[in-house]
Image 1 (cartoon, rainbow, N blue to C red):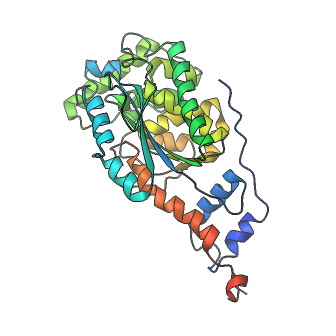
Image 2: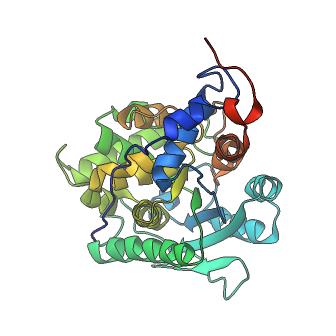
Image 3: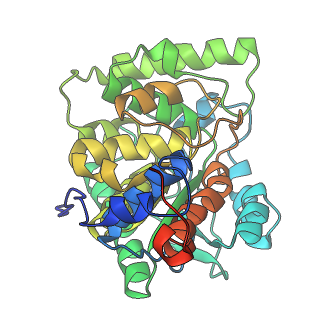
Length: 344
């Protein structure tokens, strides 16, 4: 797949517009950097964050049946039903912060039928077990990338300018750990965490199983990101990668959540490095490995709240800060307009 993602470039007058607001230069700190980034993404002095959308991609993992998670696989589809009923944390945060939420069935091991708020993009009923074979075929990987991109293309046609990314999938922290290890070069032990709450014995088992998977695949450090994705990824991770690439190609603002979402971004960024310019890193996850991802992407997250829930919750919580950055740029008076004397 090919995506044309232009690097963001300076907008004449944008920094002067930020500096000319009724405040000491730089006094709004990180919000000023955000305002500059948003203006450059949209190439506008008056950016508009229209029709913000939260997409929660869901998929199951064959390796979950081997014990890499503390929860049984059926929790994935049960949580999807909870999302559709409006009862999960991401529903609460999205509602209160003005984000429209849709759930994407990328590959859940359940037949939902047609349901309001659910986008059926299912590739298969979960990936294969990467402990013994690649998680997906190249054809499945490419299908997932393409379907993720198509979802974003439709949203762009409807006027969406901001997409927040979330996920759900029992076992997906394990997949993200393997992707992170392979794509950043960080030691596998530094990339493996407790996920949904493994105890010490469960964590040791998870580390052992993931080491087995890495040894089975035996990928070289120079392996292409899409090859790594096919070996270890989930359909929800692959679909997010395609959606992210399309969103950046449409010059959207990308709100990046935690560990699993950032693993999808690692794939996309290896494929198209300029996507990094379009990303706002919303929080630092408590899950092991996220800091390695952030270092690899040279990213500074907005929040560090000890979150490790996923679902896009960190992105939803950071969204008011992003909205505030655009608001001050568009609505705050300048020194000249307010008749306030500037700094000497």
